[in-house]
Image (tube, rainbow, N blue to C red):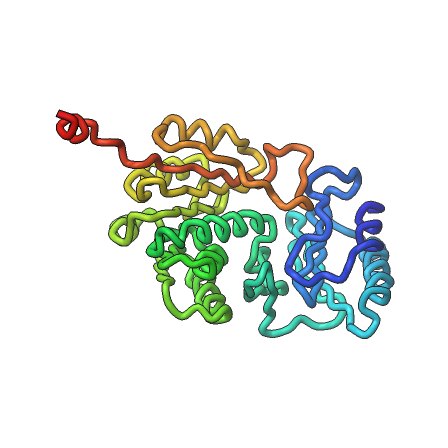
Length: 323
């Protein structure tokens, strides 16, 4: 675990929520099981394999030593989570966890919960995706002040918060998890956002009527789980979403397609789009945060941008004018 210990020994005082070490990317031999995240003022160490008490003691000592150097007047708060099959657990190893626990990212604030569940309320690998949304809406909003955004599989609505901060007129958030959407509503209030957000706590695939009536949208965000029994299976259900894009998107509107499935590469999304909705133009793949570097970009989080073309020019009218 030397690479992890080296990262701890050189880490700076974290402020924004961020990943500090990403062994899962396979770039650090012998550390593939480890990740270390900062949800200030708490550090969260995660192992995807069973660990020994000796390993945790070594890491804990390294964290204590470094914390005494960078924050000598502050208590070290850290949590350990094990995600090894059959050994799921979460433990507070030192200090305390605030309640409520609020973190920041690029000027936005979010509620997180690091002591329960495997997902903490904010996906750190999507930071660049949220930044892309912020830039896109900021650029779009001055000329199109009534920009509407559709946020499918909204989870705790981080995309919505960022879009509304950037100037979107309306964001329709759809997710079947009442608990996640309740946190999403709190996130909007936390950031002083009182208007513009709609929350539909429904199964996406059973809510197309309401979704369509609120459109068309200048931006459609699709960020589903890669596999969630009874909710979404990427290999079966992503195509159903893609087929809806032409009726959901306004002319020149954007679609942000996200997929975090190591077993499915870029070609999965690109081939489906080319087959099902070839009229949409591929724009770019949004880069992941540098700390999430992976030995295989195909395995890592995929965030692709597509754009609806503008309305076709009515050549018949122009011909009549010329005549």
